[in-house]
Figure (cartoon, rainbow, N blue to C red):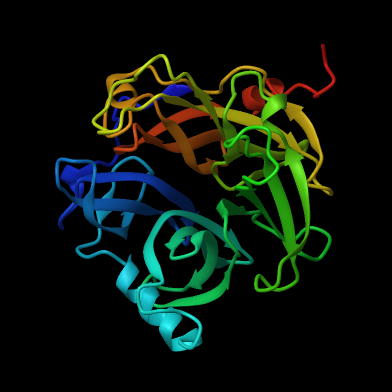
Length: 334
């Protein structure tokens, strides 16, 4: 992939309200413009902590130059209040600790956002819909521990489908050996038919965990899906200002799923799609991190991949869809 000469395309200095880190942003093209919802960590205290996290909105006419809205569109206070309104008898006032890592998908001309929620019981994944990014209708929240949820942009076999990364620890050989799963729903509220898609051991450049990255794009050959793949080396401390030290390299990977059965992998890149190389990818809050979060297929065949770099900024890389498809080989290929 070719990195944009404008990278990073969004950073904390572009945000007109308190901001320390802007990254892991969902991006779609909708109603004649590009929309980006991004994670905004603010109030860095110098010891690895932040006073809060919210979600911001930026818009663009070309997908390159972005204008950030004057205020965040969503913060944990609003989510906490909504949980209290809907299910106050089961949720303590401080049940929601943080909302972050949004992903955007357009389905049947409606905007949907997946997100992660830190709660008193663990990390949950949520799905909401909005028409204006000011009012959200909450559709579902998973049981702990689950995250990195992304929706397919259309129904498959009559159902909505999502990829996700459950985080089981009991009876696992390794504490972080997390794979990718998928689930289906008739209405985006009730989810089931959960089944595994791809395991860590099938990705040559991962030894810790893998997970969905950006929402899939549809091609005649299959669903093109970016993944994040993590390689951990406790002997090698990486750059960054994570006070506990940082030892995980995050790569962008690529897989191809069957159009009719998205739990079936029909192609996989054996090497990273993108590896940390540039200063803005190698150094930041957590260095050596590339995390794809938005994938757009243009009419020309160009694919825009937006990604979080070093857990600090948003960057952009491009490629032609035919080149990406050619790099996905069958799992049983030698």
